[in-house]
Image (spheres, rainbow, N blue to C red):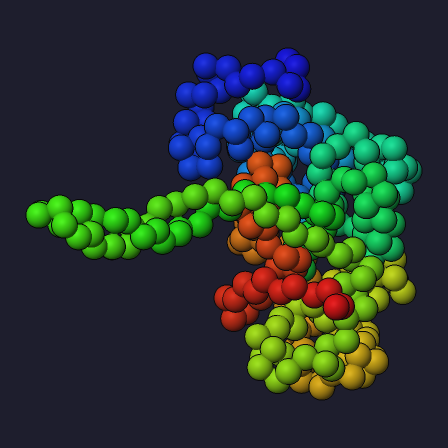
Length: 337
């Protein structure tokens, strides 16, 4: 099946509702898109599910990790028979069953072994289950190759998605008002009345890198802006620092909780933020992958991937944060001006 082939009659019937929603041209652009999802845990599986169902050309599952018992709490593409198998390989069958019209590939090598030329093979690169340094390095390589970059993950009740589309063009439908002239019965005068119609407008927006976003000074935000911001931004930094020091994510025990509390104080103090911006008990809710949170955040990330591929509608810029404790999802543009 050729990447640039037209949509077949079978696909047209399959994607009928989507085509009615965002149009045939958008579906054709989706049909030509090649996506890499690195990290096929519970969150990555949700992203894969949604983008495969949308009808992209191909999805590559990259993960060197083996299936463990914890994966069954959130990973929907594997079964108990897959314990000990490579998780990307184990996820291929169910991924393919979701949509036989999508090419599904597997890569079991390490993410660290990949070069910029490897990422250049894809239209969009999505990375999960990776360290801060991996995120920074891959984002840099994608920007050099003009590849759109997404990263995201779920930590207990918390989740995030970051988007860097570089300079991105998209089409947005807007309603415009027009003055319409109407003749009076005697034909001597005219009256004007307003009429509205929906038109498609081409727009361009520019995104910043992950590294640049981390440099924003939150002390310059107004009180109102801070109230509307998410503490998940700093929770993510705390977890990144923990992983950098211990080469693993935290687990639910008193020792890790104590370490996380100490790092919380360091991170917030350095940023000039009040300690209560991140709750005292956050460490009790940031371990493992909760499937409901993975479904919400994975759905948002997949939605943004679809929008980026189809170039239809305004993308989120540039972070999405989800806090399952207070059931809030926030889109925040974190990019120093």
